[in-house]
Length: 241
Length: 85
Image 1 (cartoon, helix red, strand yellow):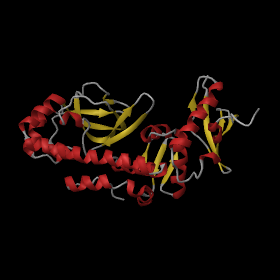
Image 2 (cartoon, chains in turn red, brown):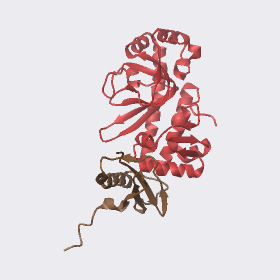
Image 3 (tube, each protein chain N blue to C red):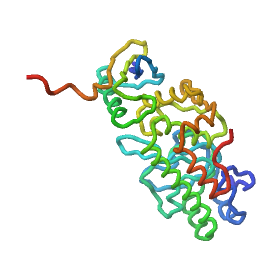
Image 4 (tube, helix red, strand yellow):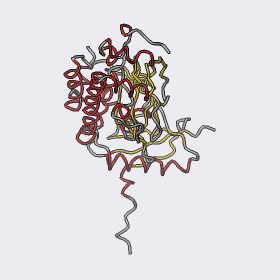
């Protein structure tokens, strides 16, 4: 158990809780490391913990048997395990670590007890779930109406928002799972984005060179969910340039 | 033995190399693998940079650089089953 001081917490939801609500959680908080491809929960199995990333990224993935693709992404702006807050202890989706980091987690039962004691704690976490639903809805919108290049630009921006550096160790294979497409399609899209000067690609690495250009390429597929988060929490999610 | 095949794509004369490759159990599996990918791209993926997937071909190489198979994407339409007696 780390029982971290609220003033040193980097997860923005935990950091913005009232002191009283944080004190309710604090005895049950535990610091864990996030390693790439670690599972935070698995489809249809009981979600043991709700995880608040301090840094690093977790992906919520639909695994259909015919293929896997990402349906949601969370970093230090939120938490993984939204169903627990909604009173459901399992989900058909899987959650795995996409970028190495650290997190603070709490047992699902402990969090539910704390929410039962504090309506303001529950309301705070529900506000995040609203913004997460907006993110997932925007992903559906992007999948329906946007080209692979635009969707890749959006995904890279969302990933960049949740990291503290511009260099991302990601393979085309991984991006193809995240975008629900075939790897050669991602290879073509990466080459196209690189040709505009927005990114630099080398084997297993993508570096963001020009966020403005990437936002221009992503068009309206990026920005709505990020604006909604900022409106709800009065905290920016988009990274500066 | 590492049977890794690189799914390079030629589009309107330009070759876009695949640096990662896919592992397959035997070389005979390359054609079906390529057809399945081409089918998903042709029927399920919209790209701004590719006006028509039928202008693309796979030029699949092994790790020595040997070209194992050239497969135009219109192979997904199958062999014509009409026009013969």
